[in-house]
Length: 194
Image: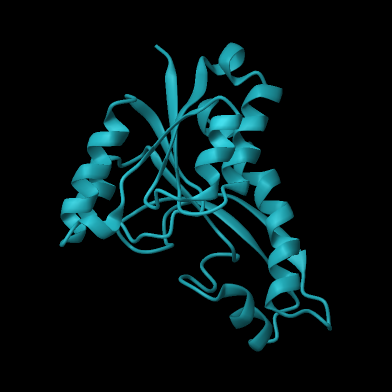
């Protein structure tokens, strides 16, 4: 049975694009019977949707602003996701907190990337917080999503140095290069059952 991967984005989709390219280069279709089936955004104008189209991936959007309650948005999002019979749902810069009902519906099939070395600095502004705390290293974590924000089981991490002249933007750029590398690696490990 084919393992369909659905990627959720909110912005430019650089992690999504890195995953789609890694799937092609790593021959996921042949090795794991897996493919990126769709990219879905909560923002209809997200730049990543056009990138996904150019990479040959089906796209859709479910605008969160059209729903009064978070649960209603999550239900509509689930309907769109489930059209693709997903084996795995990948959050790649998807900037929405998901309800417990949504998370539980996809338990064991939902992963996220977070720009810190979890459990340090869950939530927002991770790079600024790492610099302010005097950290000598920072990094990125791929983890399974649970109902507790940024606290699921860790699948992969990468470390980068915090340089003396770093600000949040320079540190974020260094971390992003590692995000592009390890997210695809972690997905490949998940597909291989590691």
